Image (cartoon, rainbow over all chains, first blue to last red; front, top):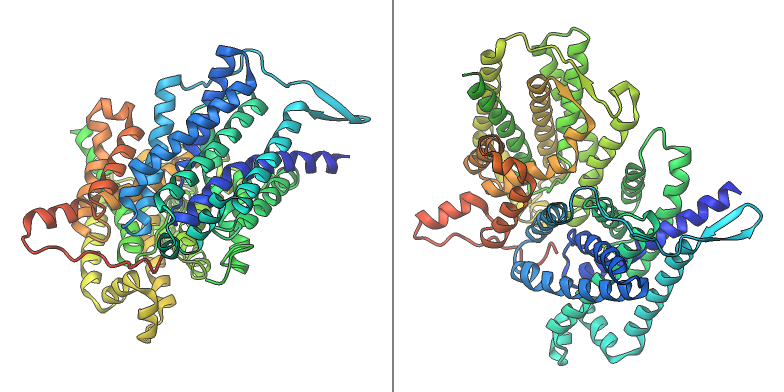
Length: 288
Length: 290
């Protein structure tokens, strides 16, 4: 019973990781940037979610607004922060991104106070009993459901539409795609919009699960999401999804059984280092 | 006078720590996002030995050896990964270090180790020791950069594959850079522990790793003088200006971002461009390490 409960908890956590890490993978696959500041967009999503829900009372509206606004913020971040750095060596954009992330944490702290915000009346806090003694919160069902829907929507977009074809072509070979008339710039904007809005969805969902948004909520997400995309083999979407769920489940078991040796975050990185020693290209990465 | 001594001591420790990272990241081109772990390893070693009545001066080499051993292990592991994978792996090492320290009562757990005995040299004497060690390592860095080893480091930083083709044992030199850099960070850790007389897991986390990387990058990656200048400036600025202390992280990160945006080769690069009519060679990365 405990096993099943841990497993489900792991899947819920893993779905959140997947939503966050997906945006990072998209950015890495296209631009080869380790986009640490992605977690700032995740936090922004959480804040917008709570503020709009408290102001209007509609959680659905909050989710939509958060995804749209944060998606635009992501595009803006690309335009202002990353585009000028594309010609520099990779560590430059990595450091710039870390700086951006730390600065945003401070700005959240200054703007909304250090103690965070909560929902006035948190939606979806009820639960159903699947079978005797085993409860699942509505919020947890929503997390798994919404992530699945968003993933399927993304898969449809990239596989079934012309935009998706252009996108995949750009990831594979930017120069060739440009030669075939794909507007690289638009693909990059789209990339940042989708990745950021997924992060916003994750932020709203995490705010719902914890009934709290705080300035530092992104810190764990940012570093762990990096671990996940590296684990999955940088740039591989399939690898990222597998790594997210695997890590979610592993953590939920690990916290119970080896929690006295390592804390939760350390488990993730111990696993990461272990995997990289055996497969330096990550779980699903191609040959280096 | 006591205030100035504290200031100078902090400065010297930061310079030593930043130079130790510069040895790995600047000279050898191996980015590290978890360098504070080695500062921590040195600090904990020195703190625990001091509490067991080992004289301060003996704890310094012990801290260096302990940190260097850890560095050698991490270095060996890091040989398998490159570029972005290396950055994340070293970041993981930092989190692993804090995660382990936090959970072990042996290391004082969350609370850390307080009441570390004083160095026994008085504040002034301790300051002189710190400055002497920082200057010694600065001189050593300048010497290495002109030596055969320094050329190999530079070559590895520029293009690892070509260096290997030239018949140079890249792994060996990377490991040497790692061991010297982490060992020195351990020395800085020993000084740190006896300066603040307290060590805790939060002192060696990711923020600390980023701060020291900021010093190296703001100074100009690989430039000894630039790094000394930036480390000295950035370590005491928050103490001198109260406003900056309140918004310390915002200031640091803003500076770091501005530096990356407008002068990725740091203060050293800025000076080179300002005072030289000959255009500086643009680092050629050719996209091959992306």
